Length: 97
Image (cartoon, rainbow, N blue to C red; front, side, top):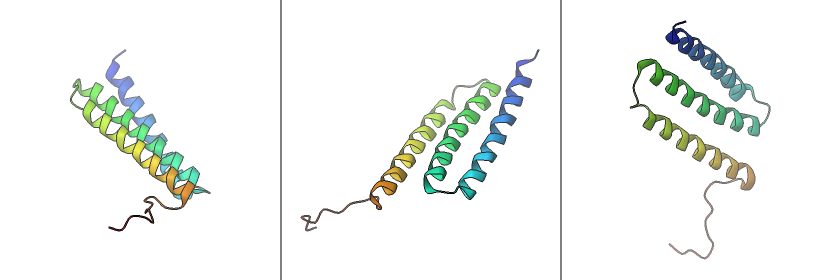
């Protein structure tokens, strides 16, 4: 069996699951559900880039996968801090700048 067909099928499946996560981001009942769905979309985007890289037979897209992973992690951390404290950037009262 040709491996390119398997990779294309995997791309379609991951793309459909990414659409399902987009529905969860839009219709999620709570902010926590939306944050988890956004994080899952970041992971799925990394999988799509990896599968596309395998399909093309190149290794140049690994940097893009790392970049998406870092941005997804930072986004999740910022949303978690917002959910915990209610603000992202805290100002110190003793800071007179």
